[in-house]
Image (cartoon, rainbow, N blue to C red; front, side, top):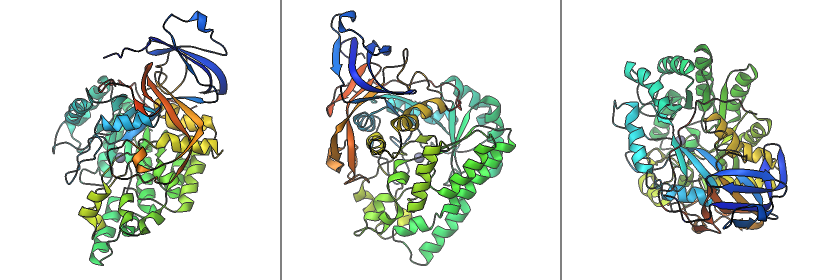
Length: 471
Ligand SMILES: [Zn+2]
């Protein structure tokens, strides 16, 4: 599967974003891994056939790690349009080198291995970057409890439970699950929304004819997130401090609850997404049903929630920015939901824009470059059991990296992107720098917008136990 590329690559003069700070150093890659990082690595000392990349005035970051994607997701009425080929090509073009995908639900009553086997099949021979999976839970019985530790043996050290939707976990089920995962060191990731509150609101909206996109947001108020976050945090605490990871956090109220638990030393991690950091609920009122583009759960929030999330990233109470990439064509959303938001497939694309958007915020000093790397690569790698193989530029780590050119400003338009969907929520956003080269295990995947990797180059990564300490 290896490509016919130079075995040794020397990246010279780049501004490397290391955990200790940004330094102008050389970086030597031999085979799949980083062999050396030093102020000056003489070319003469490298093997013949070494390719030299001059990264002067560029930034070299650890490859992005997106721990919340939905490739090939089948939701019954539609299938998310990126598969493991198109989705990982888009990811690589955007500077992401590893994903941890959340498989969709399988047939009713299926074992926890069913969807994993299915997703191995989807990804194998398709992905161009490395990938891993979370387990997905859709019911709970003695068999599931017994099988959870076996999942760890397969390199899957986190599972997802939903507090809403058809396969939702009740508090009782969560309590039982968390007791097991606390004992086994498995990380439970939770979609935290209060199902009863939301379904009552949705029914009321439909009854009153409130079916425009904006009512999607109104039917899922901030309390619906905060209540669920609060309940599951209490359940995790009662279980003996099972490590807990809240996916796609969107509100200040939810964040406040998480901060309180973290301050007491409870192992609770939080993830937010670019859509909650860069967009807000005013998008639901755009003309011509454009609001449907932004139907996702949880919904977009207020500007004040948005700034609370940025504070959460700065002070470390939110550790991860992942995408929840789940693309459906605007055309499809309009066809299904022009007259009723409750019929709209929920989700939006973002896998390609995440790193450039966050990098741009670092260039405009909204956060430091080190923080940008922490939340997009290092922390997700640590929490999800990929570190230090992934998530850091260090000797011995996989040579997964992205070179960013801060002098190339660009306006995001849909036709510049590689996601297999007919719109981007970030249309018109200005980027202060773009990825010009993405590398996975020493192999160039994309260079200057060209795909260099062969389909299927990406490999499954077995993860270690999660919940590592966050530096
Ligand atoms: Zn999701």
